[in-house]
Image (cartoon, rainbow, N blue to C red):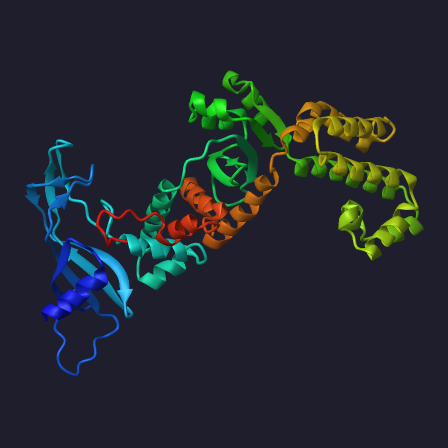
Length: 445
């Protein structure tokens, strides 16, 4: 029996603790003993009672404490299943008085955080499973309530976040997300603030007004604002006003996402196409029927056959051909290597769209002219603005997987973990597998 207890203690892997007893329990909580040639039911729970053999540690500062303030009752923590049997660790933790902290707290446990009833390694496995499975499926797999799984996942991801190295925020991305009909929210939109250098979201708040961005700005210190070099967003005026109204951010450059610039240009092309085909004859209508996607597609993304079809389509109307050529030129301007080149190219685009007779392209001209300084600023720092829109795909994946989120902070944690790609380095791989498990004892991981 002693060697069996030693083996079970080695499997648990917690230095400073030893196995005092172990026994089986029925799902109803009734204890029973295994006899010869008796197969343990698969739903039987293995309870491992442990005791401390070393001096206890303070949960606040980690120092050893000699004085025991109070003996508490036995508690249980659910651990990882063992050969398909649920496992529970049973222990009566002491309330220790720390001379350094000058207060009495429950001792530090190497297998669980304070106020938790699941071990860290169980929380780690549930958090990793929840990245590819709905929360309800993870709950069924481990025999827990989905609220318990969500709380355990939050604790594990927060430990992982606390172990990440702190990086200075230099490039900020601002974007809005439409919530649609996903329940009743304070607003139909949320604003997502992201770090363009890492691609991770930093803050999520309801609304898309100046007040929403100001809520996030209030969380920054003066040194944080001084380190920011650039803001990038779509052409939403509220974001621009919120940043420029803060005197501490007067030095920061404000730019627009090329994706939304081309999106506005494609909207002008589509409006011109509908206006042209409204007055077109039967032959022109037959030529352009079902070609909307091809007309808005970038030339370099078209196959040789699609380019030939597009030439045949544009040969029937010079107005559509010129507008399409202007938008392709605008795509090239947004990829200019420096500010001067981008400024020259944008001036040429503005000259070609200045005709008042072409109303859709004139609207595009006015929009590009109003945001001229923010557009040419792209050629100065070349921010990775594609990561702003990449968050939308990750957002949709998470929301569909979990059937919606009411807690934005939980969604933010999952979104950061999914976006950062923590396995790109050896250190990141270790933190991904352990999810930042703290190890107060040698083998507590």
